[in-house]
Length: 454
Image 1 (tube, helix red, strand yellow):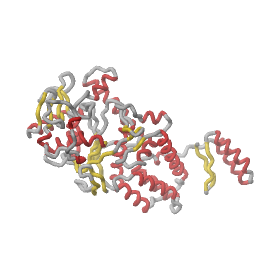
Image 2 (tube, one colour):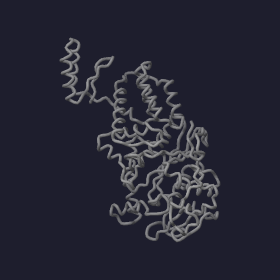
Image 3 (cartoon, one colour):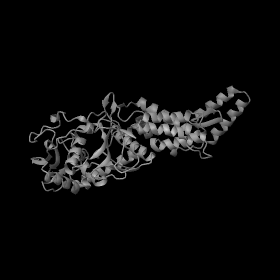
Image 4 (cartoon, one colour):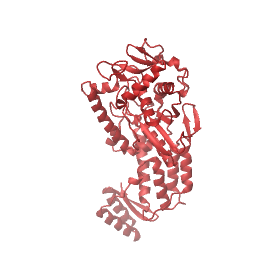
């Protein structure tokens, strides 16, 4: 397995800390609102990564956090807490109990979205608000090493005392002055570990308030996976601030490497611009479903692009993905299920080679199409191979069932076949038209006519 590691900025052979076991942490949703389909790309990517390792025989421990406090509007240390903004939007009083209820609502919707996209549930989904003691303890560790300082609005990490700050993605020389305008900070890139808030928050040794967004991920990942683990993922927008902050505070506290491999997915675009709530150019999975598309058509759409490349969303592109997926389903359903076949070892090898080369899902999809078109494979081999590939692709082939064809349509199909046998092709075409009016299609295949829903 070769993966592009943002820490070294090159593809590397994956070597787990513990042979045969992969520990991975994924930046999860901030549950103040519905996730849009651009957000969901990150979770499809994480799901494919997990599935590939499991397909390749590894045991995986997958953790994804839930941010239900502390994520400020700027993704750094400025602006309003997103959960607080969510409470105001929904007309709820500012309280920890209401914040919990708001989070419950959007966690449920997030889980519905991920289930619809056939994303496997992580082994752990820790909530930031459940790990306040662990976050306080980690800040105290940093304080004990002289790496923090206090100003009027909170406790901050002193990046000058972590000389390799910004090593992720090779961005140590980035101008961080854009991140915030807090003149009390020693350095613009210094970041909050704890923010004071007398009205809403938890008690701490430094005063009432809430944890910084970055310390949450460090505390939760180390709690579940240890102080060093294999893989950390997220969107490319996390590299500059969030992930570099995670690395700095974690490695400064423990003196150990934090995560060995850092993987990031690119953005989903709309008209060439990043999809985002702030721009208002976003769609939700609910929007996709309301237009008559399957959520798995969106999954297929994403798999057509490498996770490290941007992909431009259009309804026309989604329709093409839906049509392609429907065609694959039709082919799969046409294959006999009377006997159990074995997957093709040659095509399986090519499929795995594509995925082991930094999760090349476009090539893996091409391998799937090669299977359905390969006349050298028996129908039983094709069926078995499609189901085998779908252990990674997650396109729902195993759930596909033949719908019973209404008796009226079956009778018409037989009449059409009789007309063809007698050479009356005009009548056969007329009957085909009657079948189509009933919402079905008659296809002539080498093994005889086949009726399917239009």
